[in-house]
Image 1: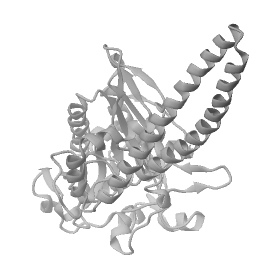
Image 2: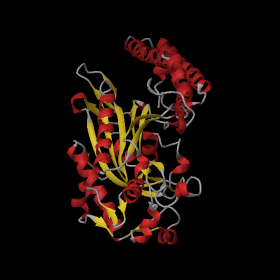
Image 3: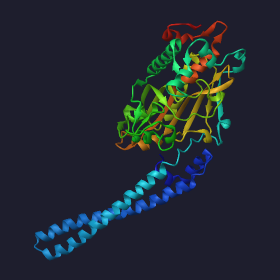
Image 4: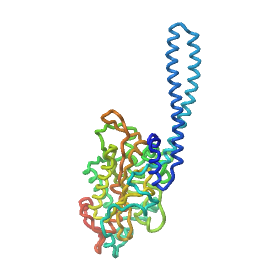
Length: 423
């Protein structure tokens, strides 16, 4: 969440940035500052009374030592008054702090200065594209027909077991999944990311820590009896490894990667946009996460974008990179680049990765700091990216690499699959 001192000292700039999200947050921000003004007033009053109580305690001790019991008893009456008063002030302070926190949860991150105004996806900026994507679209079967033809994925069996959005991978389809996961993890490790295998369920504090709660509560699967949430992405458990942690400056950047299944309740609209692997409730993904020094986080974002770009090049897929406009950005992000692969049969773009810098937004919720050489502590910057999400990658691989003899496996994947073709 945003830091109140930042809002107080940079109000105009913050509101101008938030306006890029195509929604007015001015009333909420002003409410936050009003509550903070009350909170600081109460805090000052409380501090003054506590200081007076400490001084009285010293004076009472001195009076007793001097045999001035009556004077000491008079001061003790004032001490009793202060005790009741400070209790009341502490209750008021806690209430104001909670009100301020709940209001802060409603305000998204301030977009980076490079983010443009925009209402939605149509106004995102294309910053890179691999060229003519329509040259390879003749007589292409959609991936759901290819999955049936080559017995790779059974969508109907998944409906029987769990419901729509839970496919069953079979034979070479399952091996292709495993190959992609291992390939992505190996590439991340080669790029300096340490692999973790985190839990697939998280508590409420973890959801709030990375900003999924309360913003996306309706999209997360909730296990009510245990009050746990199925993770929507490995970003949540990986980043929360550092909740309430004080790091040393020389430890930065910290680079983590992990494979997990991901669970999301949202299903979107009906029709071809959600058919097959286009949108699922459960899917596999390899995530990369960084905790970075604030002065270098945008260098690390460029590095992460280059990493994802390299993966897509190795998979020999047509793709483009978009810088998201304010109206299409995630709640916690300051700057996001989306990667989309082209579906040769559907002739449409499919998102396969979002790579973002959250600056201090998550770290402020997580209370993740580092101590610099000067001994002062400050919040880290957090970043994450999909490297990569599997369903639409599989869809694009099947559709773009099909020919009259079957489906060709990209050269980089062959050692992981153990086969060169699906036929």
